[in-house]
Image 1 (cartoon, rainbow, N blue to C red):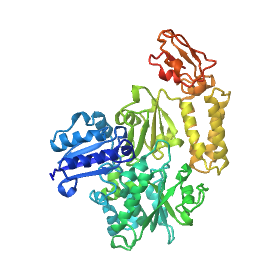
Image 2: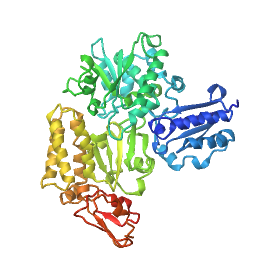
Image 3: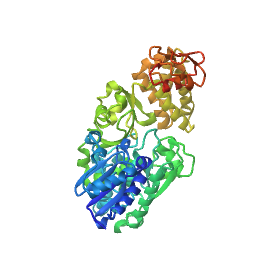
Image 4: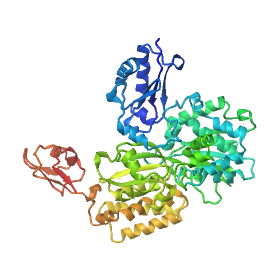
Length: 592
């Protein structure tokens, strides 16, 4: 068989697989064999699956690397593979019309990747691939040349803050746990990512699970823990599968278990599957779930670092926080602290979704502006419509208006604006979005996910949702806005955990920045023409061709008219389903 100095990478994250990554990978194997090229590293030709490449909107993404020249293809399907193999791999002529364009380069240009630096370039199911990019060198370093206190001081000096929501300094948390006088301590990785539109932690585990494992090993060594857990939701089957394989391979290679790397340090990790309860992302509810209890939060203090899993000192860090650790140890605290802002060091991974051209997974330095993320990395708004807001922090976050798009993305700035970084969800909203309806959407989620333990959250979120629902149906009353604001503040102040404390944020931020939309709803109008009960459909006679498409589509029989003559909609019969609006090719049907 022929041998070529070629590497082929196929995106096999969840997005890549959904777009046909498995079929593309199989097609490459078949075509390489037909071309007489053996896909074997020893034969100077390698082909492997990789995790999320970031720009999910262009999956399936494929790299063809010949020598030191890399070509990336987008939107690849299995039937396109024969041509790529023939023209590019064999004849050395890249298929230019399928290559990524300037928007792909712009998407990556302003990113700075730490956690995602190896995602999309190494095989997540091959421990040798991780070792080949200096994987587990940081773990070896701390266990052979650093004391636990030295590790903690390094993390403190780096300025790394928890990437799971609150932003508590990681080194300080480790220091407190390390000082606890207990023979048994635990370290837990919180991978219970449940925010709508969020896929940061899932993608990291799918693309580079060994970085998370190595971060846990280093953290356990620093605080003196010999047992660890990864709490991950069962709805992430691919991440769970790759994580379990990585744990098994780490044990076989001496990175987990007894006397790791010939030292006296013992540490192993178990996987605990969550059942999809959003509240279990809260650390005390997560602990209760691991213990076999119902996943409900408890009052704090005591905090888990003092009294956590089974009453023992416990550190809980999320996936992204732990994945940063090996890179900080390898490159140094000053390196990590050299980017970001004074109080928000390093980078942050965001899931960029919504009405954005380039949706996907990004990692940017703290302090970058929202404008740079939306218009340079994200490529701007779909359909070139106007930006209305950016919702950050997941369902408990707030909505930042377009007028503030120049603001810095960091912990302090977002909190000041009425939102927060959270785990990293970032949903872009455009001029067609109704902000009252958006607040209702997020509150529906948090209200449904409330565990019901405390009255302010259980009852308060229900009352808030009732008021919002009434307003979006045109039944709002005088004083509703003031009631929403007062009740929201009460729920925030009195709720037991972060779910209830954050649930009113979408309401408060949208009232603060988009009060005029709420007032319009109270007058019976939805300015964005979204809220069904407030809409009126009518036909513009000068545009209507009398084709009958709307008449045939109307399920209520509300449309009348003769062929080739203007049609009419009877508002008394119309059920406001929008079918007529959707089928009209001449834009003669309007809604307002």
